Structure formats: structure tokens, C-alpha cells
Length: 274
Image (cartoon, rainbow, N blue to C red):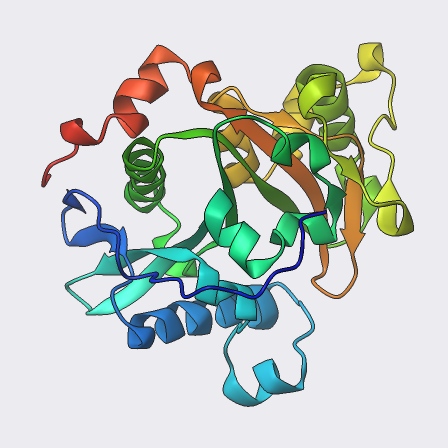
């Protein structure tokens, strides 16, 4: 656990990214409270209206996925300029911001003490969503390019966060969970562990019985993307009844990124206007 301390001011509009464009789409960091609110509205539409998460009274009244942690994070946006609307978003939290806030969101579901102890800059990724009509390759590529540019700009060595399956039916994802456990379990020195109160074992099927094709069909696109970047998962899934999700802790070391993805996503200088 991180020490509680009096929060210091965090300017979430201080950072910028290089120009990241694809047709009418642009990825950049939020620049105003109005844009943060628009991202929260999109998150509410996806997580609560579409995926069945349960909002608290304030969220239900505002129709926004609001949280105090947002005040300590940078928020990535994908904007469709032809419609003048935000169609995708991601939330980033660096180590200093987490220390000021007092914790990471991931620590509400996993013991991440080994990740926090990792030397160098670490970054939590969270609250990723895309408007249904925009779940296309160009949108997803822009999100990854934004992540890569932010990683490079802030000298991030390790990324982590909660990767979610929609719903809490463990049987529906048996193959995927077992596949992650047997083939992508994080090394002991980085291995997060799901908190006991909602812990779900992942080794539900013996390794020789895992059907990789079926497992891949069960994996959400975002988790597949992390795996392509050399990502690992922690030990155990977290059953989040309130958010109607089954979560795994995903960990990605920058040095594990393959050459193809390093060139494509991490090197920001290759991503001027398309």
C-alpha cells in the first residue's frame, strides 16, 4: 500500500503528445474539464448502459463515469473531427500522481506491491473504451499510438492495469483464463495477485487441454493487444460484480515490446499526420 498523504495539485492538462492522425480521427490528451466530462459520458455509455455496470447515485444522476482519481490522471482521447465528438478514451496514471492520490485503481482489485516496488517509472492504464460504431482498426491503432507516444515521452518502463472480460460468468471464459495462466503468467518478481475476497483461480483447465483457438476467441481485443506487446497477467482473476466484469491484471515491460510494435507504437516520431 502507498502512504496516504495530502494531495498536491496535479495539472492534468500540462502534457501534450505529437500529432497523431488517421483520416478524420485524432488522438491527443484532454485539454479541458469539458473534454474530461465528455470522456466520462462516453465511459458511462459503454460501461453502464452497454455493459451492465451498476452506477452509484451520483453517476446515475450525471450520466457520467465520475471518480476522484480522474483528477490525478491524464486522459487520452480519440476525436472524430468530422462529427466533432470524442469516440474513444484511455486513462493514464504515472507514479508521482498515484503517490499524490494515495493509490492506484488496480490496487482495489489486486495486490500490486511487487509492481510498485519496480524501479523506474511505472504507469497505470485504465478506463479504456470506444464508442460502438468506432470499434475499428483505425481507432484502435490510434489508441495504441497514443499509449506509445505517452510511454516514450514520460520514460515509462512498466505499464499495468485491469483488463476486463464483460460479465462475471467464469465458465464462459474457462479456456481464455486457463490460456492466460499457462502461457502468459507474469514472472514472480512482477506477479500481482487478485485480492482474496473476489479471487477466482485461472488454472481451470490443464495446460494440455487448453484449446488455443477457443481461448483466443474468448479474449477481449484489448487483452489480445497487450499480449502482442509481450504482456503478462497476474495470478487470479477478480470478480467485479458491481462493474459486471471479470478482471485480470495485465503487466507490460517496455523492454519486452517486440521490434515491430516498438516501431509502430512506441516511437512517437514516426507518427505525424496521416
